[in-house]
Length: 125
Image 1 (tube, rainbow, N blue to C red):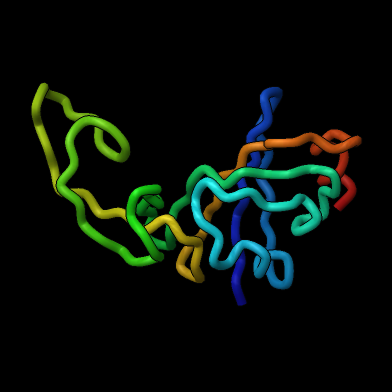
Image 2: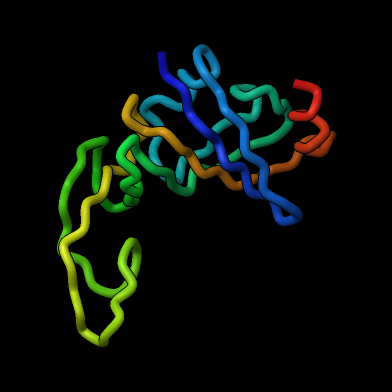
């Protein structure tokens, strides 16, 4: 059974919601940057863009790593590492950009709004 914690960001506020099968199955195989219809989670009229997430070990999903594999990258200043000194680099563990069964959290941003506010839609459920 697949279960995801969704963090949905809108300009006004952020919401957290947990989805399990069959709603969670709509996210399997999607990649960072793809859009998902709101009907998957019960928010008809909305569209969401996947911006990131984390796996079961807490490692972040990285947009430039293909697939759902876990890998160690040598990174400098930027995504996933903020160097305390100029020029410092470090090997960090990341997960690929594809959502799999190992993903726990998915970050979403509202691309298109529906007729009702998200807080109202999710408060009823």
